[in-house]
Image (cartoon, rainbow over all chains, first blue to last red; front, side, top):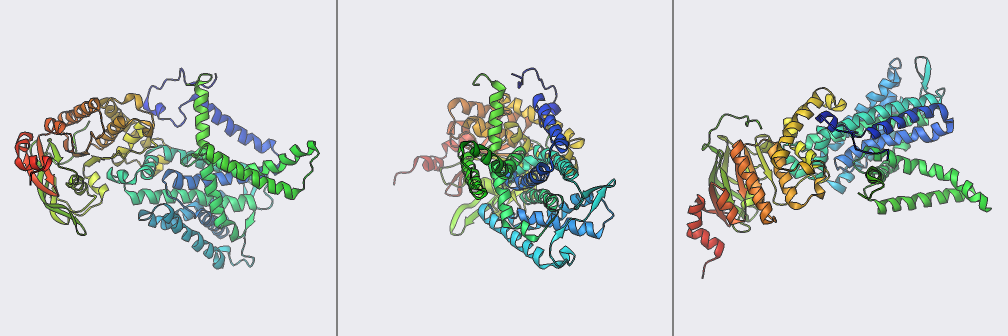
Length: 361
Length: 266
């Protein structure tokens, strides 16, 4: 009964075209953000370090891929590599200019992957669908080769690995071994919120409409004066920017150090699955997808032994591991059958039903 | 709606001239030596039996194909080889034989997307959805609402077009083309698959667009009743050649047209 449209009249076009036209939605969003910040002070370091930080990082990467694949309809398998470009660019920048605050470098590193992404997006004018996916695979392999073979990228470090140097903000360590999960979580959370807000502005405006137009009917879009190449390249650039920032956060805010191998093809598929399960063409779906694919296995790992032990079934950790894979796999298939348009669509349907509850329509 | 922004042309001037245009795909000739013109503010029908090359003609006009021979002059300038989006920016809009809407978008967003070429706030402001970006959004929204009122589709403003019945989809597509404020509006079978009432509605909209805003319209249509009632002049194609050109009455009496449609005894 609380979730109602009634009585909320729109008297001008600004309020009518608001991204969250319902007051209840705005309040809900505010509460979620508040809760996310409160979690930094309530949650233990396992929750922050092993669950929340990676969840946010993967959500950000999913938003990136969603802009390209979900909104513009261009299938990409180069996400891992574009994330890698961001991470390596961030490493080079912050080691070359250690005095500049690292938060600035995290944002700037995204521009490097945006440029590389736009470059590898050039074939998208001519090729579509699976063929484009194969073309982006070239980016994946080529860039990964660069990460391995160009020692300059890791400052000729013999181990060939990226490591997070100690960096501070107002005297508090925010990166490196001394930074607490709490400060890193707060930083990642803030970056993800800001970038999600910007992405949401983009996809709801002229640029978003042009992207969707290209996705839904590229010929009609072109006959309406939308330039296909520019629009697609912009999608590649913005998408890769998000992936690049996510890559930098992944290495320096979560792992603390990593080798080229974290940016392999598996990473690309991992993000792609999140986008598909979460919902193509939905920002909130990116969060749902990341939660289902990343958090669910962790939760199962904790819940399963607890559920099974009262029945006197004690299982080894290896069996739990197998069960985890099976259950997650089954759930993915279940959700795809129930709603091929992803969790975001389920969420939307749920909200529609709630609006008219307890009546059917 | 604003007046089209191009060198002032008055009613009756030649807006688009097609001169000796031929179009071939390998060995197949879709058009052979076709010439006709479209004058400012008229409704020009292109008719002919199936496969006569009508849609190919439209595709040449809006830059999707480039004629193998002959030339097309638009607003007095010979058209170079161009991409379809350049033709669109030059002031040519069109609708499609099979509806080509952006299915996942609402009616409102579809028509707003038609305004894309007239919107130019920077990427920076788009990021923040404030200042010039929001101002522009509201300005164009006003224009789009005028079109929505005009086409009487207020009730489906926020409905995703994929869920609309066919007749309404055709109407939304007309709205999207109108949003571009074109100098020349190409309609490819705007009434295909409609019932009588929908056809009457659509005819009314076409006439109103033409009379109120002076938009030049070229349309392909199979319903002869509609063609004869709506159009000022008709050009008839058969097997890629022009066989008749003139007012509906002249064309109706033309023996070659009658033969083309009814067949000849051999």
